[in-house]
Image 1 (cartoon, rainbow, N blue to C red):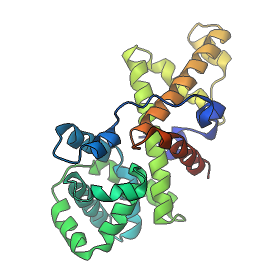
Image 2 (image 1 turned 180 degrees about the vertical axis):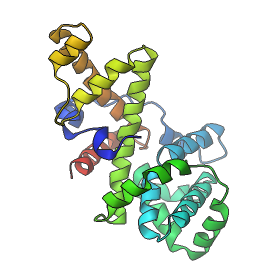
Image 3 (image 1 turned 60 degrees about the vertical axis):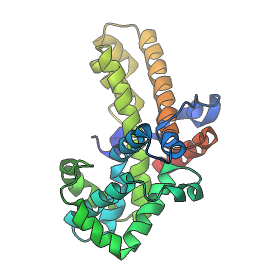
Image 4 (image 1 turned 90 degrees about the vertical axis):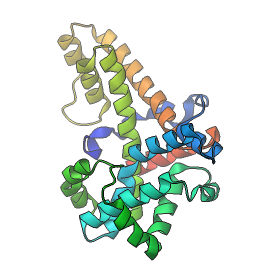
Length: 257
């Protein structure tokens, strides 16, 4: 996965992403499925597993900030998600306004404060493969260096925001790959970033034998699709459509901080 500062920039959101569109279409999403089916629903279990696999990095970052040893943080994170997947603590989610981000942060704080669960997590975490440990180890050096000046809560919030953005960019890339346009996606993504060295519309037009106006229109559609997918991804982590805009504003604030 790309480093945090390569995932997106503040300019990627723009006025439209801050609420210019009407309410995002809110179908049955991952987190709402989990909350609506408190029993042994297969759909709810699958949705919960999907969320755990997608959003382990913020939890690991929080736990790692609290642990002296990376191995302990790995075991605790695995153990935490093992217990979450048993759905022992979902009743408390209403206190967190039905938002997955708030629920997981509160849950992991309670989890680490409970010494009996702490010991259980180390025991149960070993051998679990709920999260990709190889990816943790690959990113560890970079992440620890960046996180030195941040609190555990700040690390969690920042990684949460960038995990959402990574998920969005991965979905958008898959769409372009399905159409056989990965190389064009790569250039559109670079144009989205507010960084020195990004290609100009003229450069992209020359590379793909297009007019500059065609590139301008293609980039407009790229950005609009990015914003749509961002809302959809956020919708996966809240229980009510009325929460989407608040979560989006929170994400933007964290990214720009």
